[in-house]
Image (tube, rainbow over all chains, first blue to last red; front, side, top):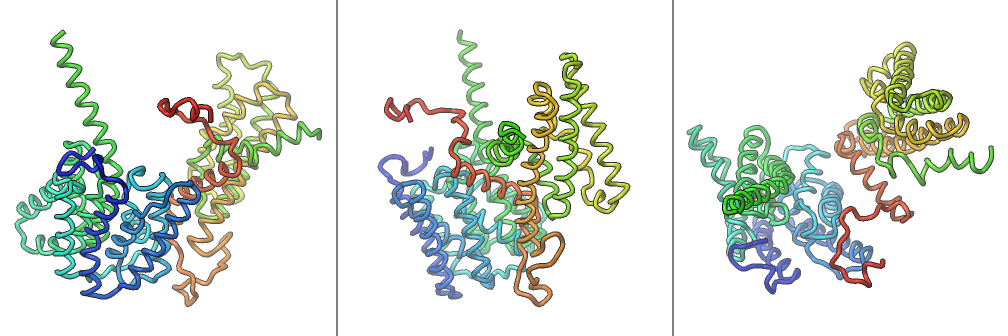
Length: 266
Length: 221
């Protein structure tokens, strides 16, 4: 499925993929802990994820998977810090179970579990999410994103497709205050770990451009009204719902083109 | 009532429930289950219409020309639905306003036409009545469970009676706003179906796209 960089299908087992995502997400997590604390809530989230993974490993009689840890890390990074623990736990459980485990685990679903959990939280307990992630977290997030890009786990097409509408919008409006909110840690984390998640993203190359572009345009649309977190979460959720359709359209288009070509040559 | 007749009444409650097994009537199950009161009214309206429609259609089943039977079935069902809607408007106007179009939409509810077409057309009146009543009660059971969960967690109340003190009024309960949105009904129904089919594997449908690459010993499972 993934063609740039290392092909994860060649020799990369699930645990190694999990480890790569874990390292990439671990960088901003460490930065965030250094910047604002919150190590306890991250540990709590990861503990909850292990419990859910163990429950489903038992139900399905499969070996234990550890992908929930990465989802929990991303969720705990993005969740507004003042959210009560029981609300965080409920939302994370919902995201892990309904967004991922119920489909059979990572790679079998079509949504990012952290994204589903955050969307549940924002729907259920609407609140003013103070943006308290700082510059260091953003730099660490970009570092994690660079690792994923280098390993081919994050598609550069999605990233570019995402950035283009935002840059175009900023250039067209020409207002510096429209650009001011853009380079922020929530947006970077959301792009790299929610929108860029290969499970949630489209998996054909033209589809990746369309998917990234749709997510970017939606972030711009939602960002003019709501908080950065809500805009990136809902843009990611909506775009990943459309990702399979985009892939299917690309497949149809390629199939038609091939049939026409064959038809001409007899 | 013979045991066979009793089965017409009890089988649709769980074993062949119209909502959880046949996945019919989902639209209204999403729309009216934000509170127990609307769900109960809708359940009663559907059960009455379904029972009466089954009885009427079974009564005239030998006189219905098969080429126009669907038109006649729909006409009978629509007449009954209009009566039910008018009665609601006359005696429970506020409730009919809260239910908006959904009582009128019983006409298009697949459970009603499905029972008329598959059961009442082929069976005598008394079994048809029992079958209609049983399916109505099966629908009602699912609606009441979904509504109890949605109103309970979404507003901390049942039938409008506040059971859990709300945090906004000094209590401890923070309502789950998500429960009052339509997607939550999808999730609850899905989880119910999952639980039901785990408990009763006979309800699991065969795979629509079976795998052919699993080898002979796996194919036998």
